[in-house]
Structure formats: C-alpha cells, structure tokens
Length: 425
Ligand code: 5GP
Image (cartoon, rainbow, N blue to C red; front, side, top):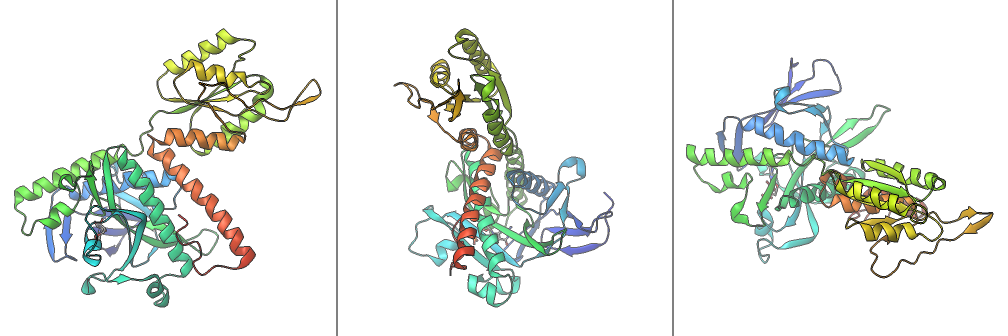
C-alpha cells in the first residue's frame, strides 16, 4: 500500500504513517535478525515476510479472544505483509513471562534446573535500553521513574499472563511447549478521551522460546541463531526453515476445530431458557443447532436427532433442556458418546403448580447438571476449548474479567490493597 512518512524504526521493523488514518500506522517487518542487543546482525531474505505472517496470525488469535491489541489487520501475503496497527505511545518495558526456567532466568537463579516448570508463572520487566543491555527493573522502579503508572503496570502484567496462557494452550495443541515470551505494550488514545493499554509491537519467532515435545534440542525459535557464534550461510538457511515452519504452524491458531453445541429442549415451553443458553454460547463464538424432541413423547424421533447430530461433521456438545423428570438428559446421554450437559429449567409451572425437576440421574449417566444457562454455555465452551485456541482464549479472558469485577468491587468497598490485583490473572 501507499505509505506516508517513516515515523520510527526498530532493529527489525520500520513504522510509517497510514495514508488515510491519523490513528493508525503501517508496520513493515524486515529481513534482519540480531542478537546480543544488536551486536550480532545478519540478513535472512524473506524473514520479514515470515515475521509479519507470524505476528498477524498470533495477534488475530489474541484479538479474537477479546484482548486489547494494536493490531487492526494485514500482515498476510495479499497485503504485501504490511500490518496496520493503532498508533500508540510505546512503553519502553519488555514484559517477559516464563512458564519454564530457561535463558537469562537460569543465570539469575543458578540453583534452578533448566526446564523446571514455574508455578505460578514468573513475570519480569526489562527496561529497553540497548546501551545498558536492557536492565531488569522492579515494579517499584518502573513506577518511581514514571515509565508507567501502578494501574498501567498491573494491566500490562495481567495481560501478559493471559497472552502467555492463550498462546501456551494454542501451542500445546501442536505438542509444542511455550517456554517463555516477551511482549510490549503501548498507550493509545481512547476515542472518548483518556488512554488505554494495548498489546503492541510484534509477537514473532524472535519473541518466544518454543520446544516441540518439551525437548529443548528440538527448539524452533530464535535461540537457534543466538546459539551459533558465527553462522554460515547454511546455518542461516537452517534458521529460516524453522521460521517458515513456525509461520505455517501459527496459521492453525485461528482455525476452528468445528465444535458446536446441540441444544435439545423437551418442549417449546423451554425456549426462553434455551435462548439464554444460546446467547451465552454466542459470546464464545460457538455455533448452535436447536431442536425440540421429547424423551417421553417422541423417543424414536429424539434418538434419530441425536444420531443425525453425531453423524455430522464437527464435534457436538449436547445441552439438554427439559423440566419435570429431566429424563431427556439421561436418554440423550445413553444414546451418544459425546458430552451432555443437562440444564433443566427449574421453577416452571405445570397445571398451575411449580415443578421442581428431579435432578437425580441414573447410575451410568455422565451428564453434568448445570442450573444457570450461562454456566451451561461456559461448561460447553470449556469442553470445546480443549481443541480450539480461540474458544480457550475467550474462556480465559471471560474468567479474568469476572475476577476483576470482584476484586474491583472489593477495592471500592475497602480502598485499594497494597498489592492491588497483582497475581489475579
Ligand atoms: P531471556 O531473558 O531468557 O534472554 O529471554 C526471555 C524471553 O524473552 C525469550 O523468549 C526471548 O526470546 C525474549 N526476548 C528477550 N529479549 C528480547 C528482545 O530484545 N527481542 C525479542 N524479540 N525477544 C526478546
């Protein structure tokens, strides 16, 4: 695309004014690869394209999960690999999240064995200053030097943990261990005034350590380049092959696993309850099929519906909505090997009397009974999240927002605690 003036340049990217939008920039990633704060530097033809593909695919997943990022679009071949991002003021802090002990963490913690699983994950801050080799900063230093406010730092740390959680799961689905990750944030102008914290910069194969099958020897990331003192052209070709593999693998991050929810209600009088379930499922982007089928009145029809759903492409999670005996749930459960969530509408009236469903399910029936429609949707989302990175991301972000609501309410009641929400993600 036509680009405006250059507004900034990093070691591996150039930023340009967007030709039409004052609130956006164009990012072009370059073919450079550097290590040791720029002391070692090479060019790998095509690396910029692979970095743009990787970054845009990672950011698409994080946007879909509901995290605030600067990524607006582009980055794929049809856009000449140019990414469009929201303009923001960068906060000069590298936030590193570590799930596994490796790299500089081992130097600072000599007693720690490489590969140790860290729980909770460790969040560290490094002030961006090549001349001083990006010194580690404490939260107190960041606030004292007015690099970020306490509230901004808390958000950056929470978001960094969530990003790690979501990307670790996406990689896990490919049997790859996310070891550690570096992210950066910016301050963007809110349309209504004030600023907001956004994930900014890039997340590419330079930003993390990834070990297939949890084996460091099989690493796919930039560490391969860091480990070679003076790389030959053949070494650089080997590095490029890994970057190509990673760009291809992350293309799977946003691919839906084809899961869907099959809502079966015992009667049209259950429709209101079903609508609440459907609305909550929509928040996770879960497609829904809806049927009315009664275990009491139309057992063969119900069985046929279940068989049809089971035989369709994609992975179903059944949600049965039936009052009275709740027999529908046991019936569907016995007919399918897929998960069944029973969400009986309690408190229905029948012939003028309030009906309390019998919640007991016979022995040998695996249905989970969930009373709130929103919780039934969450239970279905958790099942489908097991092999779907986007749904997993949405669950993680929703749970985080639920926690924040509680801790914010508590802070309002009692004033902020010394630690704020630290560690709540
Ligand atoms: P370490 O502190 O162990 O060297 O690095 C921790 C994590 O941050 C690793 O995933 C590493 O790739 C990443 N990282 C550290 N410094 C930089 C940097 O300057 N640029 C990029 N892209 N990633 C970095």
